[in-house]
Image (cartoon, rainbow over the protein chains, first blue to last red):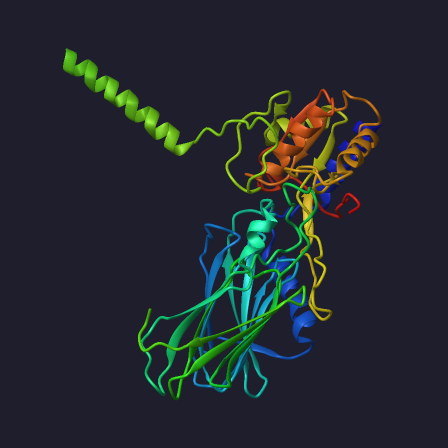
Length: 267
Length: 185
């Protein structure tokens, strides 16, 4: 009886799917992006982002838990912020960045987790609210990439520690490239502690705010798609020598802040 | 003469080296694999049978084998912002499978072992010689672990399908959208 059922199931399956999907089709991906657009941006109109925003990601990622992303804002239009959407991640909106007056809103670098072969979208938002989208397809290493178990005590030891590097020399009034490195496990709730045999509760950075001499550089909202020990690259425009302040808040409502004296030279 | 022999030996060595480089042999770990779930997997499973696509298709035609997809399903994390978008992508697997998430975990949570034993007893209708096919994706340790675990539970006809969902799809065989069954947490 079971055999008959299986044969039938296979038979009907073959019949109904003459155009059998070899894998996720173009149509599936377009439908997914359409659904995500509605969920994240509502009914707002989306324009082609060619010439406004550029998204760089490796075609084939070496480590699905640490995929480097570069978003470049290439146009002359004033930009309010940028969204990074990883379509097939369960929590697809990986990051939303709003730029402040101390930013040079042309660059954003992040490291993210990618669940499976997926489309990725960068959406720039103009000062007038207009949205511009670009897409990249990323082949990350496999759909069963639930991270390996971890030793929670070690991962939490240095939580909230930060470092700031300047990647170009300080020149007042000119864009300076900076890199912020944060120690945080960014647990996504899908890791198993090897010792306690319990799922490590999700514990991840929800927001990061960076300001320079009291002026906002950027505000970042994120969740479980950011990698362990996040690294954020950005440009800012200092008018004078001064202090960069970073404020973090995570899903356990832990708050971390740090102030950095800005050095003269790249480090 | 001697030179020729030496050259031949060198050639053999080179062939061996190339073969190892192209196809690294991954030994079966003694216990369950607890490292990253994605990566090179062994070619064998002690106590079970490795099947590839044509063999699996034949097996399904000629037996009442139970297909078990062990792809780890995403778990909604606590602490997600209230307005955060939680939208796991649709999962497709081999048609008429059961999606039993986490059966291939390196370490099972408290109480999960008993829970999985009970699910497998139902799926096999209490018969230890019901053929069980464990799979997820290519290069996915979860399916290897799941096969090993099932063998350890005393099932006598355990099949491991390392080609996974993508291997099945590549052959143009039917898939269906699936809903995960998760152990209570």
